[in-house]
Image (cartoon, rainbow over all chains, first blue to last red):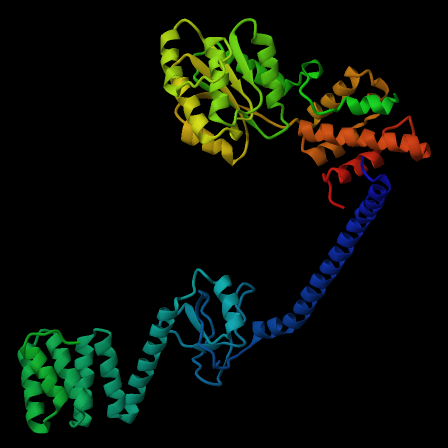
Length: 247
Length: 269
């Protein structure tokens, strides 16, 4: 037989808990709903002025964070100006488009109906990635585009500056990308300004070799080696002579 | 003896064919097993959670068929080989095994081959999950002779897999699962058990609300339900003796039911 008085005590406790449970659940639910509402309201209040500003004018500031790059399709001829550091641009955006207030916008090297946006901080990057997952470029693609932009800038700059270091960098870029014809052209441009730059000779020789002009490459390297005793040229010359692959 | 004493007794957990209650699910299981007896099975598996009525079903089919077929019911597990052989001797030779006699297992197998076609023996084994593996293996070999057919009842636990897969996998002709009762079945079960003891008044006092609570606590398991009801009437007995003002004789006490559920650990305080 059970200890009935003790059992009755337990039963009273059970009934108290039965009453307490829904009360606690109600209180927790109310607090949770209140808390969530407060957060949502705060968020709405804090974000709405920014949105209104961004719909009219977009101030561009370059971010120090690694950039997130998004291509925003905008077929209605956007009023976007090229901007690098601290430039201002105006842009008409629809409600679905992202807030460009903290973005760097660069003139796209893509069809005119697309705008490229760079420079969101990490938090925004996530939001953008989520929102624009279908048009967000992969990281390596963004790097490629940035690099290409940089080379385009250098090419423009070179027209004025005629700096052989710039043209050499451009030659190396094209060689790396496998555009050997352009690499050769820019190596020649470099050589025309400064004929002593070892790397421009090497790039030229390698670019010729890659285009199938092996003898040309050997001749160029041999003459450069004869004049300068460059060990890099010697090494490359040996490689080509032995029929080895050239990086 | 008060009403509550009698009501308590109606929920004693024992296998009593007089108190067998025909519920739709148990009738279906019985009919399935009865039908299987006419088929050439070697092994039938009867499984379900403890308290779902496996033993009662085996008892009932044994009781109904014992004069029509050569059927044997081994209700408690035979845990060692000697005991198993004694029982087997008894079944096959139809005489008790003489004292100081030792029989080799192969002798039973050979004997089965001799009587093949002459006798059809069905053995109902309850609590088969408790049998040692060696005996299970011997059961399997005996079933292969085609003379001895087995209905083995096991709990629906991991043992079910062990037995089914490792010993009988290819030989099980069919299986019957006994499940817990539905809410309606549980209500019928409670009422019927009380009515068998002429407790009409108490049976009528048990309302749907009480049944819902019982179902919640027991998940429709007959044994758990009986235990809960038994304990409830035990509590009734206590208050009837010590403090009758605590309950009304015109309605069923949900409080006592809840206390009983706490006592048997069906609900957590």
